[in-house]
Image: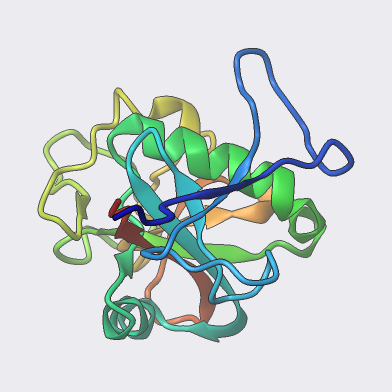
Length: 190
């Protein structure tokens, strides 16, 4: 018995490319895609076998965003290994370019265990590190090109990570109690 696993949609009108990259949209039963840009549509990164969903229809605090992803059998996006960070960076810069001038934040799944210091603060290698929701520590060396300049800076109560559109979709540390957009992920299952 044969079963359809992927449908491939190729568009030369809306495609953009960088050296060594081809952009296609895949459709998979484990990562639904309907119209292409709704909060329920997944972008599939076949390299990391991960499906990502960018939620922009409503904003949530970090903890609520984490729970909203979980309630859909997803998790707030864990952007390591670095190939996942690269995919999201390219995907956001290709598909969400209009958000850049609006200074939107997109929560991702990393946090610090506690408030580190009160302003003025500076990053110290002895401070507790950010960890992803899967328990893996953030690898600052591997992900260095995805951080905005001088981030993380631990200003005030900035204990979670986000992708900031105004910074060209680079990472920023922010407080978890402001309602923001967010990015969920789930594994791609064949």
